Length: 476
RNA sequence: CGGGGUGUAGCGCAGUCGGCUAGCGCGCUGCGUUUGGGACGCAGAGGUCGACGGUUCGAGUCCGCCCACCCCGACCA
Image (tube, rainbow, N blue to C red; front, side, top):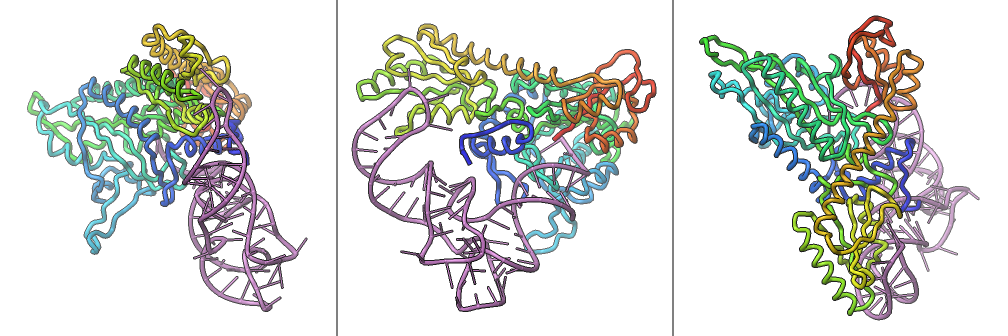
């Protein structure tokens, strides 16, 4: 096989994705089935995602805390739908210190139960509310089939858990965090997600309502990239999270939970990547600018490195890497950093020193069109600007792709054709779980989320009148 | 769990009508020459051929069983 060749064509999309993850050194297969080793470069990307999300959480008044990884099995069984939803994918610890445990411990698949237990202790009065806590953690779900970043037995995420005095406030919080995710995806990851509510059959186990941000991957499949749940009083009742209100009445809290995981890394790869490798959005890229110095002789070396130095010092706010590896040709370095998705490359050689220019190559526009030769002068301003241009262009490109692959349909034939061959279908939907299951069976497409809609129309499947529209797609 | 596929050097593979000391490319080590799109020469290192059992004078190759991983489904962030 030719090691250099990659193809993102739909039939090879999965292979292409795996190759990208492995060759860009984002992650590796672990010697444990279904688990993943996140390598330093991949973790650096995740750290930037964390940083951006965390600053948004702080801005909305949330604080971080940590809860145990082990959950007594009995906690899991308190909320009926929750346990039913998660039971098949739990890892259970039965032994500790060489002895069988009196009560098995579940490795957290999510932390509603243990956090709910603590909230019950912490919350007494309406004055204690709202509680707005986030946790950065790893969780374990025993999935049948795994895929790097998208679905691994162990994954990293943040999970926010909040408790409120009223249903309105909880709903507001649920939607506010959905907005935070939407904003993050669009403006940092350059992924034009579609936000909306999940259907009853797709919602989180134990939630009253689940909201999602859905992203379209390069093969037009959908990927749920973040969720925000309004848990109503379901968990509050199961875990006895109560407070005395202003009228001295004992009330159950309304709780929410929301999360974004390392799956976001997979979403970025599958949304922007091309046949040359990764394309990372400048806002999140571990390395925003790579500088490749080029010289033949030692005399050239000094003058080139002097310019390199000046450029690095002139861009103090950017994440820059100078690739001064010896014994590797510039061509090799170009390809190497393209594979790793670095948004902007600056080549500095003897010609540039002489002409006072910089050779720049944009990762979002492959080949010659992405190259430009600009005067040194003013690079302190135009390099950061170019990164913003790249960021904006990536979003625009992804948005165009998304919009070109969403089709409104009003009959089943068209629906089937769209979800099987073209992308996402948007259609009037009569909101019937049985029909949803039938559609899935016949076309493999699931209801991704409800869409904004006005007025009424005829459901393409049931023929009934409805006021709801929904997006359907095949998904990861 | 069902269907398909693959296990041979760090990676990618050839060898599979049983037969010599198991090969190729990339990578790796040393020396030298090289540096504007994946450099070159010379010299090297690196293998219980996934595991176990069987057939045979002889097994990477044939037979049996097992294991691991990948892809497609069912399940899911």
